[in-house]
Image 1 (cartoon, rainbow, N blue to C red):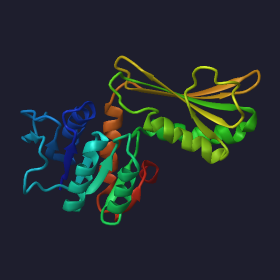
Image 2 (cartoon, rainbow, N blue to C red):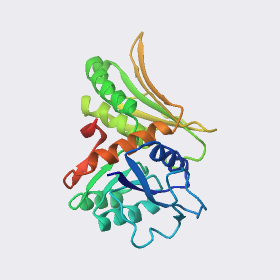
Image 3 (tube, rainbow, N blue to C red):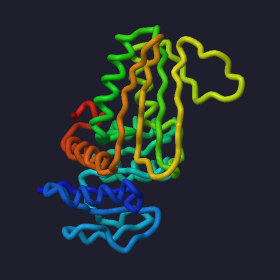
Image 4 (cartoon, helix red, strand yellow):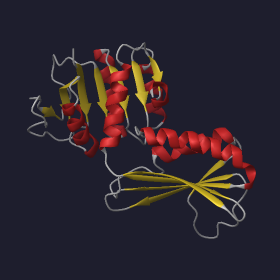
Length: 254
């Protein structure tokens, strides 16, 4: 039986990428799509699904909901998954404390997975960052630079923050500093710098700099196609089917 998928944010960049990825997967079928604005059709010869800006039509049955929206739409997507007792996968970034509390509450009823980046490559990068920061020690400064398209609204990116978490696991004393300007003074030992670059149509670049005396190490991941994240999200959704309620991470299923 095919896994029935609902997309929340179907008209966005990630939503459109997910439509193609779901359509190409013989083990999945698109059951519904919710968009900021109504679009007349959803791509794919195997589907005949109208999208709506008002939420899911009554009677739509689904096994998993994949959400790539904005924080103001995130809670509605999560509520729809809880109501349907379906698995919930989200890559929406910029969530506040209310959003994370809602995830924890939903996890008592359904399997939920939230990741700021669904790329397996980024998952591997985070592991490498933790190992490198631990191995190189206090003599190396840690700075994270991320680059995204001009329409991204949150900074630093969720992925940059996740990489910072990896660095902090190796060196818990690291304290975040978001950019520098004016007479910022000398860099203090123990800072963890975040820097956001915005422009053009960049899908997502992240570089973690480890800077020592006489040498430096740079660990970089570059995404050139959003289908990378779409495939990761669909893989996560399928992996959650049949799982007990709880909070999951991509690392739990890869």
